[in-house]
Picture 1: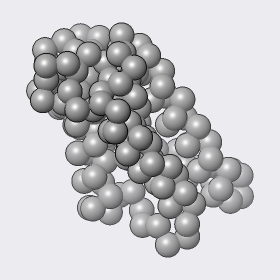
Picture 2: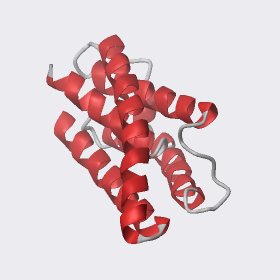
Picture 3: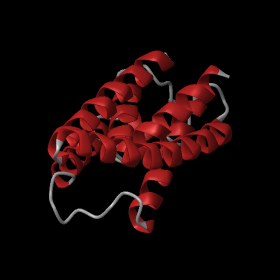
Picture 4: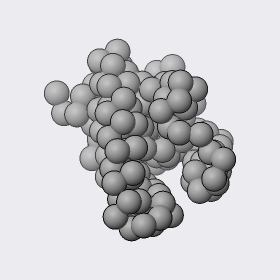
Length: 154
């Protein structure tokens, strides 16, 4: 049951920042916190995947600050977050031989994170009077939350 909660939570992170979740999961696998050896996702724990996903996550953090970045709720962005959540949830689920349930929980978490994150950021931006502080706070929550989830899986 605990792995499903972690899969749901990493999905929430994917809903906030689509590439932060895979970066965290890849580092978790690389450092041995998420056991993926002998699974189809074992490549996540290699020496290349963590760096590639980290670069993509960094680019996403920068792109999120640009004024022309589309809403996370448009179909392409929303879909990417659901896929990232399902992917990361499956990776966590493999730790307990429950990758399908992990994928479902991760996808559900991504929906919750996408919609809830957009609502929270909008309210924070309104309270701050501008979006940048809200976006940076959301970045911190996504990165810190991802790290906590990955460390807790072990």
